[in-house]
View 1 (tube, rainbow, N blue to C red):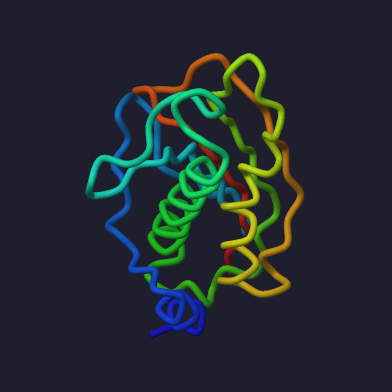
View 2 (view 1 turned 30 degrees about the horizontal axis):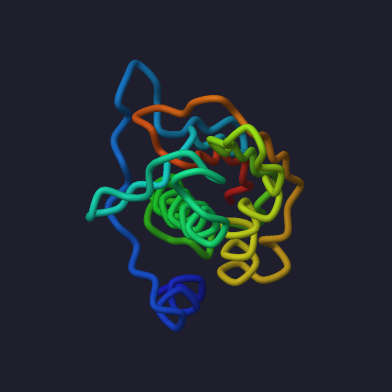
Length: 153
């Protein structure tokens, strides 16, 4: 088991199988040492977290939704790294999208659910650049979607 997976296990995270694409795109694309991971929504085995943050979904549930996105991103990283998360040398950038209500402005706080997981899992190599954007709608009504760029050796 990789050091990253040991850290994840210590905080109670079990990685799911990577989510398959729902349309005509790849779950990730590798170019040199950079891997671009398609957006991962806030889905899990129980259906995930759906709805509008700041309306049907409160801030804490929004952060939990972003955490789910992070788990799904790490599952894709594992696939891209041929099963060895210790080959992930850097989380370079996260792009976060929150399905936000008209009066909700704590978008960065929601995305901290994913960002904090990356640092917890990868240590300093998990600290990344990030964008946090509130959007009108996300696919299948999921509360949060996050994509990533990572360096894999």
